[in-house]
Image (cartoon, rainbow, N blue to C red):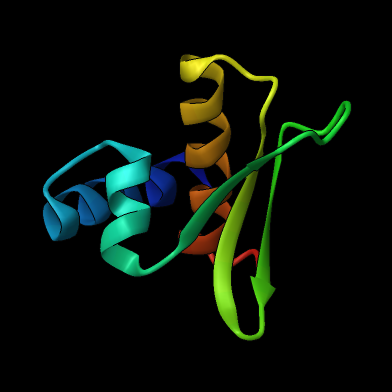
Length: 81
């Protein structure tokens, strides 16, 4: 996927959800966000009984957690499941 396709996807997501806040996007999409100690891992996307979830390292600060959540959403929206 090239940079232009990524930009188009970001614009589409912003139009659809009306926000760039990754936690609000998760809420609107029904994605559970959990904070757990993950060691050196920042975050990961998973499904728990077919319910989508993003698990974020509880040791990250607020900005790092938001960036990690955006990163995982990027995988989801770009089809890297």
